[in-house]
Length: 549
Ligand code: ADP
Ligand code: MG
Image 1: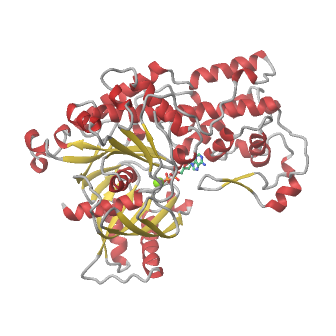
Image 2: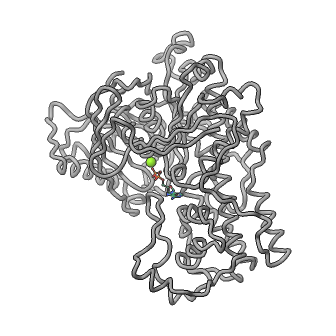
Image 3: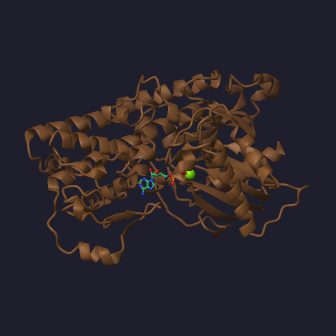
């Protein structure tokens, strides 16, 4: 369906300072069998089971975690229904948030904007200078968010945001006259019920945040207050979600972009909707159907809440342990779901001779990043799996001898050796303390959890495509020469081996044989492009659109 190309920054994009902007590999949605670049699925027949009971248990896990084609279609169909419900009424499971961002970008936009992007792991301040011809220069700095700020007083978290903006402006010698404030796009990647283009109320914290008393409050207003108290001449002109930012930033380079998809700590998507289809819209602002049919608005789906009623998702007991509300896609949960499966296998004495470790016993200690390392392992004895299990998680080892040697997973998803000195000393020949059978089963479990996530992402994206492209006007857009683009952000999509292939295979499975939708699978009609860390630039474009409206 899609072919991948990995490029550096697109032409005309200069990145100054820390961080990076959009890379732009694209894949076409075509009906070919898809390559599976770096995932190396373990041959089930090669697993050296130690008992029949163990084999049976693993087989039942395979069954539980596998989403068969008919189930995939049922999930996609349900998602389409939920999207329609969310567009009709407030308070449905899919919030289908109206962003009040209208119109599209064409790459001719210019100006200088500041953006503040707060996500699960980092806070990022970016100065974006846009010039003619889709060119941009960004200066940016990433700040790690202290875990305590995520669960404390909201005022402390927002003060931290303002202090980062203040120190960024100072470090970059940017003085802003009082009478001419710098426009700021605020990317706040949590479910927000937007009341206007630069206002809204927090529906619920996600991604491990729980600052008390914030639900129901306006994050943009809180930011304004702390900026004011620090005397910073910055105007919060747009409040938006990171997937909206992904959509806009991808659209700046690819004006045919219709969807922004986020697959990182959380999972979500935004897309362009025709305003007359937003039944719940305020008619006094957007007009009756005839008037609204000529307008387009970006909708933030907030799909993390999909199927909270549990009508269609095949939840397992391991998902329930982690988060009863999660969609089993988000990067934040995959490691923890895997950990729960492994612990269950250990408790039943099917792994590591029934011995866990202090590390594996601890919630959230099994990182989603480990899953990438495990998936990528093609060595005959699964040497990298062994290193994760024995060195990172101290399985099958005397924990008194625990060291920090192991696979050090950097946030960018590049697995590197820990300090080579210690590594050499520690990696001198040592008998493995896990068996090949242990490692094979762990790899299989990881594959099951990872592949399920990618297939569910396919069901969600498939639903969005069917909803938007299934109607004549949009179909014309796809079938036109240029086709349409989808921008995808997030480390899970960017770094998890085989995630992209599985997502694309899922889409093919949904549409290739479906007469009404198979046009999506024609060559070069729907292109998926990686837009890593695009949400900051997207917020600048949002600020620009806000000042235009
Ligand atoms: P955010 O969602 O905060 O914008 P990212 O898109 O970088 O940030 O997503 C971070 C999440 O992605 C991590 O919490 C982790 O679950 C997942 N992740 C990061 N690196 C990898 C990797 N190498 N392999 C798999 N998942 C990863
Ligand atoms: Mg992000």
